[in-house]
Image 1 (cartoon, rainbow over the protein chains, first blue to last red):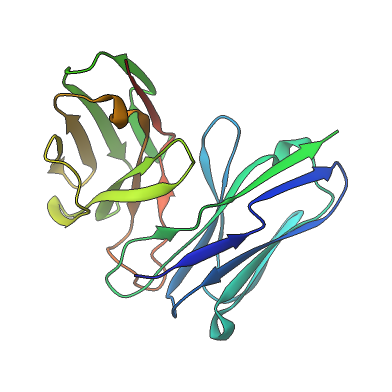
Image 2: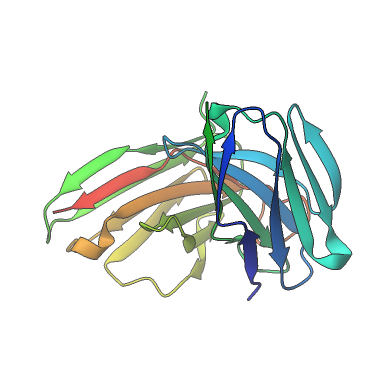
Length: 108
Length: 116
């Protein structure tokens, strides 16, 4: 099956800093999603982005499908951005395969 | 108007008991899933149903039995609970099955199961 690797595994930021999270995947994909799991455990859809670039407020994502990676940018981070960020991919008949996540802590 | 809702949110039970978690989606999706998140936060697929039919069973013990009475509902029944079953169980749904382009998946809020 498809392998998904996320980096860094952990990240600590001060409020206001910017960050880039990376997701590498081992095969071509039809679907790629980024999720934020907040400290209360909810999995929130951030982006559906199998290719190209999207922006939503302080968050943006870029997927370069031909090079099999996706980046999630967080600008002017806030304490509410804390949590775990997951990248998940699938293609063909497979179900969504998740990376192990990046745990982000934004301190005031 | 929650899209994917699951109950209960928290469940504490003794070893050996049988318990169920219910899930409903109002998105009109054809496909529903159960995922398990372990203590290290790793999310792994357990089951996938498409229009009430089981399409994926990822080597989950027989003690876990999903049931889909209609395409909007996918319940998870667990027999003879063990300590290792303690985890967060997420229900999810998507318009269609597999890695078809555009097949965005939506998750419920999770059910925290603790077996003591």
